[in-house]
Image (cartoon, rainbow over all chains, first blue to last red; front, side, top):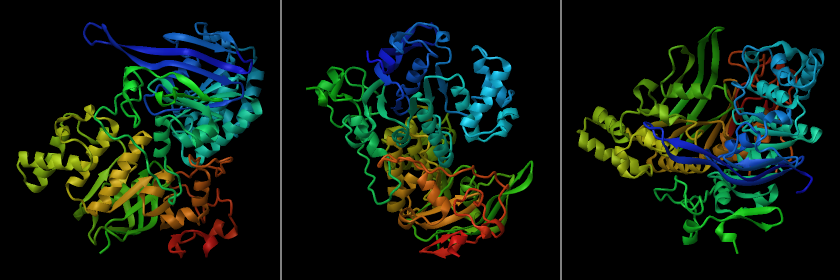
Length: 320
Length: 306
């Protein structure tokens, strides 16, 4: 294993049981995350992109160690932490969620929300408070905000507080799950700038989960495209945007309009076949929607293979 | 007669702070039956309230204090305006089939029999790209995109004079969004039903709309055809909005975020409402409110173009 790999997932799976209403017998599984292999290098921002239901948030929860996998292994700094308690990580992994309105306790002052994660670490009250104001400053707020309650802040300011609270334990890895999707564009731009600057300054590693490819292009170094619990394509940001290979990535990219009316918006979209909405269970999960599907796609599951350096694709079109 | 004429429209809401302006002195037009007018802006700018007013659906705690809305010369009460909202699941009745909900419209408005109405409902569903077997389905059996299509089928069932679509695809995935918007645009163009398209997404505006009104703090700050607006935005706010957009098609190295936050309704700066955040602010902006002036075949509310 490379020493610069901070986070490593090996065939990580999270299957949720579906039980019958009456007898509570297991009638099936929802395969939210279905065999993910992933390396995140130290200091890298990995953009995890997918549509709703792709399993991107579940993967985020797994990597944040907020839930345990059904199977697979998870290494953090080369150490197998799959089954170890999140406590031993001591604030080294932190999460920022989408909704800035529900992530702060309305009855706590901002300072109390901020110092709460420090209580398990070795800080006395004075040091904790000092740290709180230091981190508020880092995210563009000031000392006065220590004494206010969440309802007195705007959505953008709350998200700044939440980012400060994530940073205050000096984490090495932060999982950001759609941190700007509830914000307006001008506020989103401010938060994205902030996150980019902090990453450079503190050399933190990001897993940036988003459904928005434009946001992913701005913030990430590497992009992983997820569909139906699997990574379909992963590669360097420029490769993914200039030379996408997987049919799903190409469909997604074509669906995004550019804010330039002179650039044609011609989404290449799969025709409706009645079961396009359903994922294909045997073989390639994207087969029902794929424009290039062949018989083999319904028979065998393609592997995520390296087609060039740092560019891997899960598609039969590229398996020799 | 114009499909839509909004003049000097001011709308207030009653809040705990008293009556506050949510929409201030808005002028807008749709000149052509196949025109899509986009109203774009950030949350709280008044775009949804404007849309509700055009549809004649203002809540009881709102009042129009100046101006008027005319649809083909008539007021909103005597016009047929269809509305498409963001959340299809709350707009549809969960215990009626899609067919029954569309048929209802024909039974009530055109006194058709139930079977004639269902036949008509099938036709409307196929117009929005849904198989006619969907008349027997319930809303929960449909995907988000299909529900939005069903809602559009209901909206066009009455042959409305105008459609108001408020963030119609915001809850959908991008691939579904693309399909629904393409379909909506072709309905406007083929059936000559003009549309007011309300959204926060400027990239979509660039492709869906014909003309664009950018709103800030209850006012229209720029109102132009989309090609000139995106080619050369005039108002500093429009420019700032475009500069703060991350893009898929080109590499953006640095987002030039506008400082500050949009104001709360009714708590506007003296002079130009954008002055606290404007990078090109000068003395006049702090004291005098700019009017909408004709610049470069459009209207701009900014002292830079006096």
